[in-house]
Amino acid sequence: MSARFRPRALAALAAPVLWLAAALALAAPGPGRNAIASAHPLATQAGLDVLAAGGNAVDAAVAVSAVLAVVEPASSGVGGGGFYLVHIAADGHDVFVDARESAPGKARRDMFLGPDGKPRSGASISGPLAAGIPGEPAAWAHLAARYGRLPLAQSLAAAIRIARDGFPLYARLQNAIRVKQAQLAASKDAAAVFLDHGQVPAVGAMIRQPDLARTLELIARSEAREFYRGRFAERLAAAVTRDGGLWSAEDLARYRVIEREPVRFRYRDATIVTSPPPSSGGLVLADAFGILAGYELGTLDSATRIHLEIEALRRAYRDRAEYLGDPDFVKIPVEQFLSPLYAAGQRTSIRLDRATPSDLLRPVYTGEESPSTTHFSVLDHDGNRVAATISINLFFGATYVAPGTGFLLNDTMDDFAVAAGTPNAFELVGADANSIAPGKRALSSMTPTFVETPKGLLIVGSPGGSTIISNVFGCVLHWLDGAGAAAIVAAPRLHHQYLPDAVMIEPGALTAEERAALEKRGHTFRTGRSSWGNTQVVTWDYATGRVEAASDPRGFGAGLVY
Image 1 (cartoon, one colour):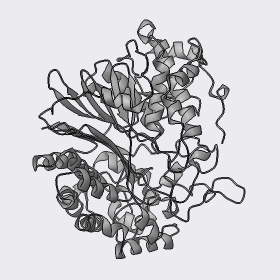
Image 2: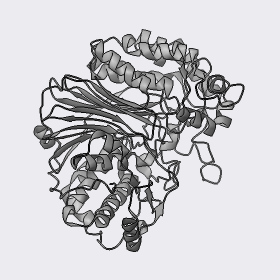
Image 3: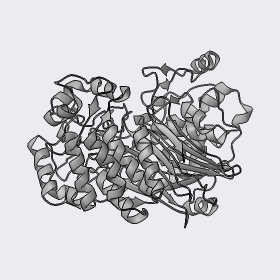
Image 4: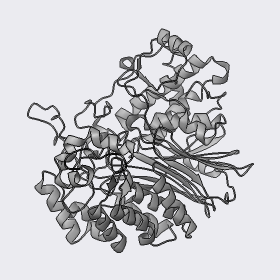
């Protein structure tokens, strides 16, 4: 996607049959090395320590997740949820572990609308009413019991210690606290942790979370059972309800992690294993790559190739808005997203010399993780791997800590289509497929992904709200063109999401000549944010055995190979 890395000529997309991609998946011996890339050095180190103690990639994923919940509380945590894409090397099994938050049993379709039928300002993003039932503790217990080698308590030990003893505040987290200072001050328990007498602490100040340490100890001791059932769950639900939310003890007791079949498709010589609904990421990737597969991009100038990438994203995000939601509640046309015939139909509306105004596409008949979501990638010496994207949605979620628990609630209810066609916090629109319903899981863009070719393996994912899918899309293209892990995470990015009808770009994403040529075609550009995403990548070159781990230079993370 950047000026430095361009796709070569593309092969046709393979037939949309999931078993075909599985049959073509490549086997390779383990790399003999462990590699982790995450958004914070303490999380990366905790994962490597678990691997050194005899754990596998799944145990490391639990450890990394838990430490991120402590040291990156603006982005994920005990009160949130996420997706874990897991590969078990011994039998080649791929599984997508869905720990997405679910709507409370008392949730209703119009719960955030005022008497005039319009969304009430801030209602879906602040306070306990904005929170879904969290899935993160259940995910840790499920992953450890089913796919790990170590007891859950051992994998959570580092997070418990860091929550109790503290960690030094770093600039990225300090900036997040500054952005949400007023909202954090409104929650007594949140203010006690993240503010110093109501003020933003200095970089280097120790952030200690004793209540969170006790909650993590409860999760470790009971393998998450007491989080969802019993006295703790009852007190948690009562506090949320007292302060304006809709949770009940029954909602917590009913929560379950769901194992789903990943989306699989072929592109060029790559097998791409990625996220199924309620993530929109995998099917949007398949849609966009299917469109690109019909062009010999290697014969075109760079501006025309970028134009086609934008037009593919425009159409794929349009389909996201109309069709995608929780597959347990709505029928999703998976075959359509994977079909070469459908992709060919999409291409008929694309002109090489002109941008397609989004309002000329078939309208949506009627959202999304924030830049504060987090991702990490893990590869162990046996070849087991995990790509995980976890979130509490906007910075600090609902900016509410239930008394005595130490963790922030998510504000994932904003990811639903609060009202048909009404943009969410990320300007994404949705249709009836993503409307609010009791027990339903909101549509997500989190896109943990594996890409395997004869040359090797890419493990990739990113935060970034509505830009997550386009971030992963660009990373895959760069890797297929030979970029290394460090170059992939550093490459400038561009994004189009159907509505608003504009291309978002980072500095350096386009040359002056490319931008002029695209503007002549009718593309408009927005540069409201200097950068976005915090991509974490692990790569493995089969021929040389080289393993690389790279953390996005936009963030504060670390990629280590052991």
